[in-house]
Amino acid sequence: MITLVVAMGLNREIGIDNQLPWHLPKDLKHFKEITSNHPIIMGRKTYESIGKPLPNRTNIVVSRKKDWFEEGILIVGSLKEALKFAQKIDEDIFIIGGGNIFEQTMDIADQLEVTEIKTTIDADTFFPKIDEKIWMKTAETCHEKDEKNNFDFCFQTYKKAK
Ligand SMILES: NC(=O)c1ccc[n+]([C@@H]2O[C@H](COP(=O)([O-])OP(=O)(O)OC[C@H]3O[C@@H](n4cnc5c(N)ncnc54)[C@H](OP(=O)(O)O)[C@@H]3O)[C@@H](O)[C@H]2O)c1
Image (cartoon, rainbow, N blue to C red; front, side, top):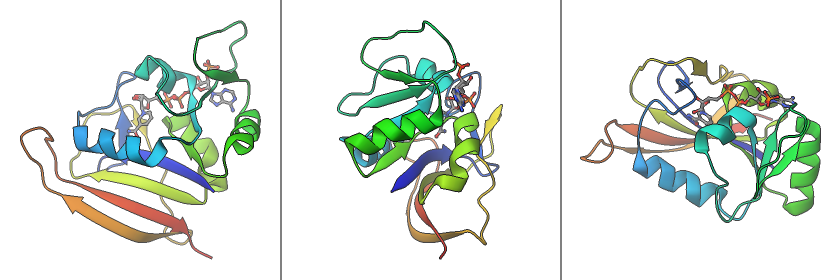
């Protein structure tokens, strides 16, 4: 099972200046719960934006750069290779971005774990359109903003319609 995990605004905004456009601790906790103990695949820019390997998960980073080495991550030269390694580790694989990697993996994904953040915000990176002919929303839980989380948001699961 290949799952894309994303937090996006109402216009599918996901990033600006190689960072997240918001700080939502509840979403980071949710992300940790979903992905811990499973392999995660990400693009080189997303890895650099996080700045360190995420603990308790095999971090697989896709890059075309030669001679790039970082401690604690597996660097591969293609998505195909990333998936091949991930499948050896676990049957549940999580692709965590960014925009470039999401564009290339929507077609092969089985499931989307979306945090829909109820705002529009400045962004330079976006999630692809979720085609309702292909994707069916199967679960949703919503949360209101509070003193630490500045926006209302909903956790949503989409599965590929059969
Ligand atoms: N809101 C969210 O859920 C979320 C999640 C993740 C990221 N983000 C945001 O998204 C932004 C980053 O996304 P992005 O689209 O700019 O970059 P990205 O998808 O993270 O990384 C792109 C890089 O990945 C490598 N790459 C992509 N496809 C490849 C392939 N087929 N084979 C080999 N290497 C490949 C290339 O690295 P090289 O240039 O090294 O060759 C490319 O420059 C940031 O703002 C980040 O904060 C948001």
